[in-house]
Structures are given as structure tokens and as C-alpha cells.
Length: 392
Image (cartoon, rainbow, N blue to C red; front, side, top):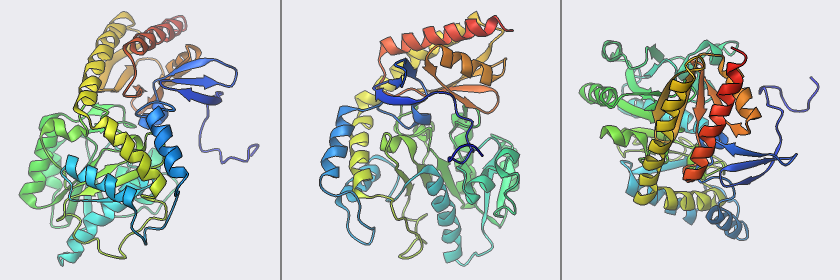
């Protein structure tokens, strides 16, 4: 081991020292157009003035206190989320992984308190990603995540993605909940059709089980609605949120109905940093921007401005690309060449993208990017594709 940092990442030879809006500046001065946004985290780009102001103002007053006390910033953010969503209650976390842990605990405790201790199984779907904790990898179930980390947390049933018949057949007297991403990120930008999400909601209702939605990556305006499930016109019982909610500051949440959260009483869960004043001050500012109807309409409009030229890009480079996937500003290019090769070509073109499963490159720009930046990104993608064509 030659580095003092644990080598769990294969890091690109890039060192960014500053961010400005949709741009990252490398220490050698090169300006990279950021279509990764910290993997859908920097929803308002880098150094957004309102976020900088909120952070500075709160930092001069109070950074952190324990959840043993009242935290006004946390209450304000929880009230906003309850007003804007299906939820009756919110618990704040530091990350999507921590949100997954609570969502699973909440579903199991719900049934335990009803006297159904054997009702602990959670139905999950292939290609999913729910974080890298013991519960998260057990829920996903893929060998890539689980190999070498056994024995795994039991109680998960894994099904093919969007297989309604299998989902119906898998429900038993042991089933507590289903967990699903409306739009898979790590799994390759796979969009669950509205009809499928509605069918899963119906199955849960018919059998009295809980529906957990993982909107860690696809939520917070990424698809042009505040949360992706709104497109299907359904509501979950429990929802995991993180990434964009903090705009770059570590923050996550679990949103739930009063019924689903009924087992979570004093002492059943906690978090040292979750929902502290600094995080929630930033989160309040993020949601004040993203939840505006005009802002979400802008995401939808920009999605169209980006997707149309991406479709043309696929048609112009049939040896490089197979298709465009996704929704809103959570899009993917399914590659015919190794996506690692195209990722490297994007770096050479001074464009940041993110790899995913199924040989996909993710495009996750800040939600407030400009039309000029959309055009610049397409031009850089085209440059990268042309560079790859010389090697095919």
C-alpha cells in the first residue's frame, strides 16, 4: 500500500481545486464541465451564492448540537418536506446509506409492533443500489457488492427488475415491504415505467405491505418533479433521500407516513450528526430553490434541450453508442465500446461524466445549468466519441 488513503477507489488522475457553477477547475488551470455533480449531489452547482451565504451565516452561530435538544433548522426543513410530500414525519441522516439502514429498520419494526415478528422479508430488485452498508448490500444482492462480505444480513428476496408476476408470487406471510428505485442510477440509468410503479403500489396495498422508495439519486428535482414517483401519481410509505438535498453538504433523510413510522419510538434509532444545524440550514436553502415550480419546469425544459441532441449523437456515432436512457437531468448513454474508454475520452475533452453498470455513462449535471452549457457538453461528448472512433 503506497498511499495513506485506503485504495477502495480507482481514482482518475485529476485534482480539482475550485468549483464555479457547472464548472470544476483542475489544479493545472483546466476548466472541466461538470456533468457528474458529485454523483447527483451538487444539485445547484458549485459555490452557489445562496448556499455559501446560508453556510457562512449558520457557521458563525452554531455548527452542531446533539439530537437530545430542539434544533430549529431541523424542524424548519422537516416541516417543508412534510408540506411538499406524502410524508407525516422525517428523520435526518448523513447519507443515503444511513437512510437505507433506517428504512429497513422502520419496515421491520412496523410489523414487530403488530405482533408479526416473522414478517421481516423485504423484496428487492436486480440492478439496485442502496448503499454499501451491511443492509444496503444485502438489499442489492449483487456479487459485485456482496462478495467477501458474508454472512449477509438475511431477509431479502431478490427479483428480476420490473417483473410484476414474480413480485406478486414472491409475497408471502413473511413479506414486510418492497424496496425499489423509480430510476436506477448505479444500475445503469434504468427507468421503471410508471405502469410498473403503479403495479408495485397496488400489490403492496392489496397485501398490506409497505412500499419503500429509494430516491437518493433520482429525487430532489432530478427528473423534473421534486421526487420521481410523482410522475406515476403514487405515494410510498417510506422514502430514502440524500445527495441533492444537501447541495454538496452531507445530508440525508427518511420520509414516512405516520403509520409506517409507528414503531419508531424514543430510543429505537439515532444519529450523531444527522440533522445538525449546519446541514439543515443548507438543506432549507436547497429546497427553497428546487421546490419552486418554475425551477422544476426549468429542469424539464433543459432535459428536452439535452436529450434531443443526445439522440442525434447516438445516431451520428452508431459504433460508440446504443441508446439514451433516463429522465429529466438523470440521463445515460448506453455504450457499445467499454464505458471506461469513453469515460477517459470525456476526461480528455474536459467533461466530467460518471460510469454505471450495464456499460452506461451517466450524465448528471447541476439542475441549474445554462442552455449554453448544455450545448458545450454535447460538443464535448461528440469530441469524445470521435476520439473513440479512431480506436474502434
